[in-house]
Image (cartoon, rainbow, N blue to C red):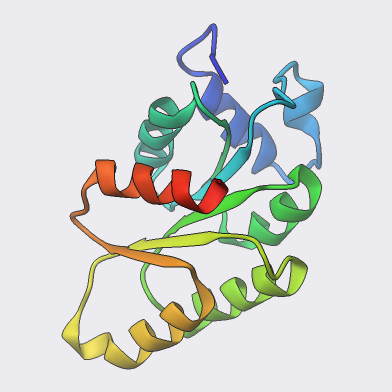
Length: 151
């Protein structure tokens, strides 16, 4: 999705995080039906914006900083792939499981900082997602994996 205004991905994030359903679409944000849709979650708004700018030419990109909205966006926007940037936790594993419940075939990529003390959580996360990339990660490798998962 090409944006005429560089802040449009941020505005879309803010609009969709407002819990008012399809406000982003109603506000004039169009979705190119010929492109696959990627949903990106990160608590870091700048990270959401950066990934949105990176992928906007090839995919429809929806971002959110609200982890509670992941399931709603998967259902409402028919996401073709989800990227989750989050600290490993039992709550995040529950959310990932919920996404799997909505769509067993939905590709999910998880990004996080690896910690040897979280080996158990790492194993549980890997059981719920298609790919894990530890920070710092190679954007080229992530892009390649996205292409593989969406082909």
